[in-house]
Image (cartoon, rainbow, N blue to C red; front, side, top):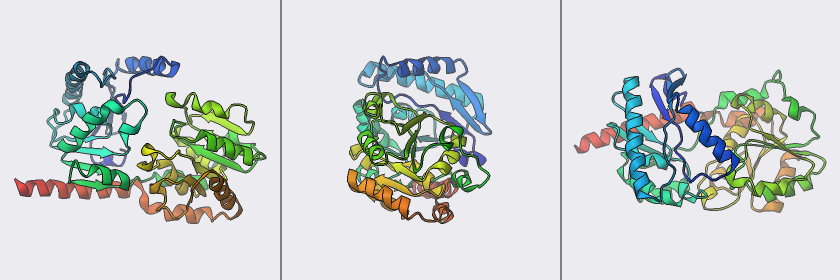
Length: 363
């Protein structure tokens, strides 16, 4: 978004829930934060980037509630657009739950940017119909993985792949000799085998436990918050002395944590959701110059410096390989430099221009 904001004004509509909330403390806290944020529904968070926090009821199985949400959300977004003086609007949808308002905002271009197999998320099956409608009505569909392209092109022939980029300059700072390692990781026994990202139910916690037990003289460091759907599964890590759950850290600090890692992990389970995933963290690790070990997700196979494991034992063996024969970090980082977000935005601009020209020629 920061790259696009250099020559565009952006209204970012904060996520509309993909599932019904639970009675968990995290969901209750999230609801209160949402209500509090509505007191200031539109705010400028960075130059040219405005954020809207809409109110909506997360209950997609009910046609009545979907209809109520649609009318309410359209009003809220249109009001924000008027306040900001938006005209000639391109509506880029990242969350299928927002599909209910697509086409109702007077947009000149509707783009669905699909980065996950959303209907495979826990508790999100009711989104299927909404998402299929969004695919069909969009002027352009962008997907981030080959598997998504194969499964979604049937809904819209104007579908293109743009794989994720990385904030290369930011993560490259992990190579700065003057960058201090964070206090909570600095003194841990090595090797430090690390992860940053959301600890959700698609993470293979059994694999993490097995890895920690094998490298019992080292440290397994997990940086990130635990999602509600993983609160029970992550308990398998309780009592493992060399697993360190450090919680969520500011984005600005992630390179410092990467600097402390000896190896970085992408320990995803293999299922319908992850087979269509393109994990951002893998390119971030590589930009930081780290050796990376991942479970066998199709999109990481194309990354030369990511070691891909075919099972738990192979995963541990690949970590040993990465520890015993690491490549120079500068070399690893340099290889991923061409996959910056700036390059991806240029790719997006080119596809959008061709798409608009093609539609104009047909009129």
